[in-house]
Image (cartoon, rainbow, N blue to C red; front, side, top):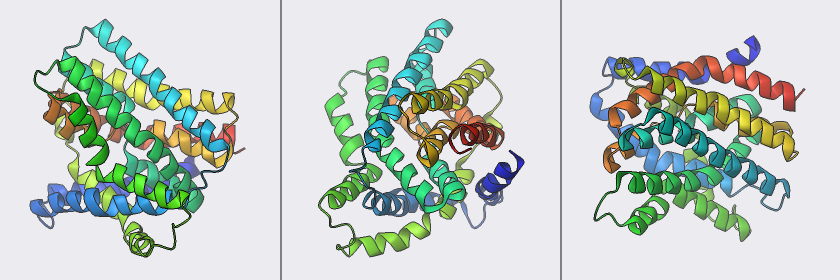
Length: 310
């Protein structure tokens, strides 16, 4: 496990560097907001487009891979609902707990997959992201609108916005489309996005680190504890169980576990503010999960590798 920790360590050191640079306001506060926009609108979509255009969708194991993820999301959602029921949580807290339980930091997941398993790992991670990103975005938006009982909110319009105005989802749809048409490397767009993709992961990890707010981790320990248990123990545990059940093995299974072991998405904070969730609690959950993943992720991946790659 020590060697595994050292392999993943550069990913977390980039997060720490982002935290340090942001705290010292280097190069400036406006720089980091600009990086966030560049990553969200240009760099990360380029990476997703490049990799989804290369995935072999004809492989029969892809169906099992998707089943593992979708079934896991259903089970994890049930766990979150049970916790909210027993705590009698307020609607804003319920939706923030849901985000903390089912969402994942795509940037960290892809960076860890590439670090551990090279291009093959990155390809499987991109496939996993292309399955999970649209599913979870729609799920979370629907749950938030229903739970908050917002009047005058057009649910269909919100779902449309999540699906067709989200640059990550658009890039996945484009990549899959040219892939299925056999045009992935014919269109000049591939060359451009391939170059942009090479700059994505280091910069995005710095930006994720810069966005964290550890000074907020002061209260709500029961929510912190249960959200971490669900996201970083139950989530990967269910994935391991389903991979064994559906005979998904090797690097593909190990990469699937990464999505369960990484912290929740930093974008959950913005969505909580937008749709009436408990934004301060969301900031706490994001920051704590990211910090604890430094220790939990190597441990979970050590178990996954012992099961699937030994």
